[in-house]
Image 1 (cartoon, rainbow over the protein chains, first blue to last red):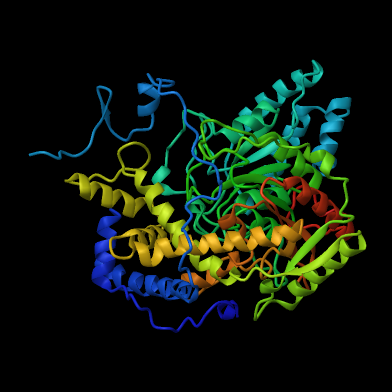
Image 2 (cartoon, one colour; image 1 turned 30 degrees about the vertical axis):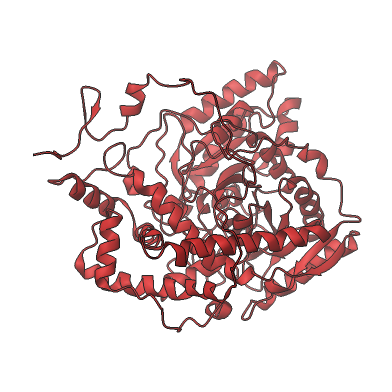
Length: 109
Length: 493
């Protein structure tokens, strides 16, 4: 019943997401998506994108985008050290650590 | 002891100050209530020892005349807030075992004002959901039961918070609201929830979802309690660069101001096809209550309303995909070992994030990716400006806006939906306030024919939470909502 609220949801998506796009986006997002899930995800993402494309009805010529509603510019502080020397706290939740460092799999052969 | 549980926070404060009750007594009653309502799964961690310690300290401050605003009042904390020494997981597997070494500003403010921490409350994973069903701890349950005895969702994402306050397992609770995550659960559980103006409460130490939309706010059973908690938790914080340095007026003083002479807008675009007739009737009832109390009701137009949800579902996932990049298996939480760094990231994030979170990260990554940025993200930011301008022009003629809080009452746990968009439509009335940064309050106004609470929403000008409390109090008095959920500590009386 609520589906009728917004738009013609059967409208074909202009920018359709196929399996290979899902794989590419998943790689960009560093999330392993097994191949057997890619089909379902592409259908879901297409559903969301088709709905989102309703925005194309809105005339946004000469409209400036906004990233924030606060209306004030970001405050500045003095460029001085105000915090730090908390190695133990920073490393308190690290999955693997050694000698005060983060440990990751080898990245240079 | 059910007598203690039936006290409002304001009444409990008075009883504590007069010595009629003690803070440890109140904390003990609430800890028992938490246990009694455990099947609702609204707590993910109970901090009983800490509660009793804090209550004892409160009692000392009361005795020495140093009581804070919410001294001795038991508070539940959404698991999205970092609490020093207490696991904080955003109800995600990826933060399993994460115990912050620091305290969020909002919770620090609450403890400074004497709040007593009961524990951490269930929520949707990373606050992404409208039913508390995406939590790694399983769904929280609404204390209100469906007509056929079926379990209902408490709403989301702050579902555990709303469920606990409605079930009397917390007197007050924190929530966060990115697209309706305080107001929708408040409406579903028949309690009061406030999303303040963007910048009113510090975001420091709150797990980020969509940083330009996220705001913390209070849950309570009465409008006055809500104002009291809001007064305690809000305030400027240099550690959050978007925190507003705007003085907070005396919100308790706003409670009895009434609405005489106020102009209240009723947006014609909020009447939507397929809307529940009972929701419409209650909305009209709300208008009548305000008119009877001396307000002038004015029809207004917010022409871009229908575009708020699709714009939100570009902006919020885009910000989330960026914010959630930090969960990499290196700095905290879960790590799944793999041969290379990239494979370790991908395996960790696949195992640690649930389905809905993954879906939103993928959407966000897609709309921000090369070639699509202008078509989606920039377009959404332009529409966001138009939505904000709609409100700006409306507030030239009205003081506040009255709408329904949700299109329906609470729905059953495990309801099958054919696609994610159906769930997203829950937020249709609440999302515009996040995009425009406005304060919004949801409060119970009546029951539907299934005996479930329905809520109204009041939206205000930026930083005018005070008017929402004046209006909310008038609606609260007129509605005289006294119905009790089937599941609540201390019995249904």
